[in-house]
Image 1 (cartoon, rainbow, N blue to C red):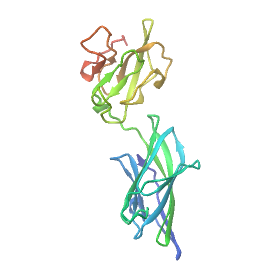
Image 2: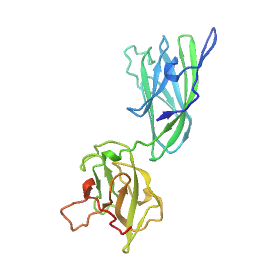
Image 3: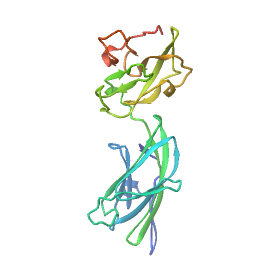
Image 4: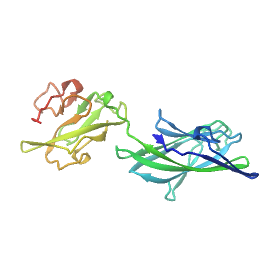
Length: 252
């Protein structure tokens, strides 16, 4: 995720208004992007404990799940509100000085999405109120792909970054093109597009007028095409490793 530019911090106290043009991570309410966990990191840099509400007030993309970690209240912008379980020895359910919390927004779709979070809270005699825009970009994990699995006649495939038996592996996306066969004719999706790894993928997950059954998939950055094994070929089973791809198997 990356944060928009032009960030500023505004803190209002009973004695007046103080506005500091500083980087968000240096403000009283520190906001940064934690790339290790793909989350917006919130840090209380007040001298007192902070009671904070975070609101998702806009989004561009299909939001599948919103998670918040830490002692904050999250509002989804449609009237829904939920209290976050607090692991706080003080039992007060607030962010202590120097404490951190994380908010994650995951999208159902593999492409880029944007959203905005509004932060409102009080610490001691001061209040804070600001909104920031964020962009969630897909994490390309092409280098972690181990094999493609074509499970039986399910009409789906799975691009794996771990073991074929299980859901282990690195999460993310790859840029891929799907091939389908119908009455001996092979067609491909319109272009390379981002798709999720370690998830069941079908014809409906790709753009283009595809008909018939899945014949293979090409992943940008990996040489060759992962061709669905023939059911009579017991040597390959239903998985194709990155070393077993085929060059131009469908004649261009």
